[in-house]
Picture (cartoon, rainbow, N blue to C red):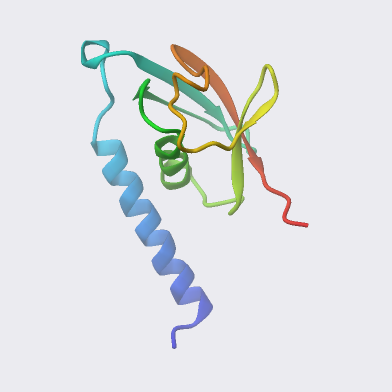
Length: 114
C-alpha cells in the first residue's frame, strides 16, 4: 500500500492537472448566451474570478473552485453569497436560479464537521 503522503501527493497532482484543464477550457462570452461573472474570496484573502454560462449547475462552480484554488484547504467547503449571507448548497440548481447572474461575489467557507 502507498504511504499517506504519496497518495496525498498523487491526489494533489490530479487536482492540479484538472485545474489546468479547466483553466485551458476558456470562458463563455455573451455571444454564447447569458454569462454569470463570479468573484470568489478565499479564506487566505486571495481572489479567483471566472465567467460561467448562467444555466450551468452550481456543481460546475464547486468543481472549478476545488481544482483551481491555490491549495486544497479547507478540504470540506461551502460557497456562500456575501449579501444576503447564504450557503449555496443546492449543487443541481443553475447559477441563474440561484440569483448569481449577471454577477456575484462569493465566499469560500470551511465546513465544520463537528
